[in-house]
Length: 243
Length: 181
Picture (cartoon, chains in turn purple, red):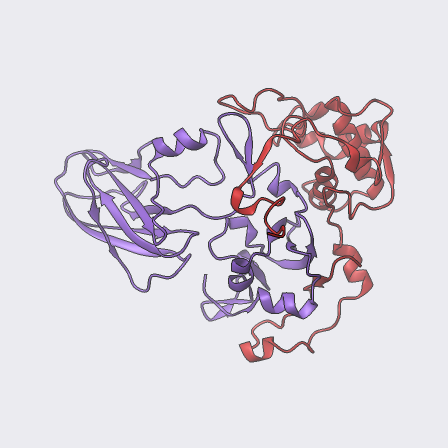
């Protein structure tokens, strides 16, 4: 997200919070009053901001008008929309959205909590589910992002992961921001599967689905970031390979 | 006050140029009434819990009137989440995550119900109604007896069955993140 805003650090300095208050509750003005506890690490203090505009206009209602918190690289609902309240304290609040939800149930039944950072991720957006392509030239394009920094490279496979080729990255590649990638492809008309795999500047590689499940189990749905495979049938119909 | 707080109702002028957004002398200060309306968060140690209390019997009625339409009679689930049972399922292929089987803190019931429930009219339950319906849910789950009474003192003391079921991400472990090295 880009747009004008006020750095979180400015607001924190403005209210002169207690030194020991290293957690912040951010609360939205939506009907549910969504509230999340946020650790005030140096990184978050330096990078988070309260936005009031985007793309040259005020925030749109669906994006949190009049103001929202923006937490680059961190999980979606920490970016509290319709922000109405920040409170500082020395421990997390343990709200419903950080206990009952947004915790990762592992295969052994234990749940990972405060897994706040986005994993290295990517998805091919063209061609993707419900589209239809024709044999011959097709441009593969998609988005990649990581909560750890910049995207370093994206590899694309058009043969179900047998072989990979590097995609081009569209400039500018910014830290903790979506990066558009693309690759020229000539489809021979035979059924196949296409998939992308991103790597970030810290060397984190987007896992394939099997490896992700081996580590996290099948119920860790809140931070799923495994590779997304599209299947293409003989008529050029593109579908989720899992469907 | 142990915390400094920031209420944002009037703090930002929409569309103001960046240079003016750094001025602190626009808008109006939040009034005590503004603050009271939104200062409703409850922490796991009970900080933030208001006065008031509720019983299982009261909660049964509050639940029937406000909650059962979505959560089913006795919290068995309906068009929205099941709230009872499910213990022993977390390690299975299809875990049933309920207040009983999953929620680590009872205080979260108050924070969430008071702010977000019931779905058509969130924020409409009184403090007493909220304590009562939390009481009823904990009773349904066998965590509180039939004559259990909840208030700001007793709610934080309840030990939920799955309290030990969470593993903090090493990067953001509250027990270690800001501790002195």
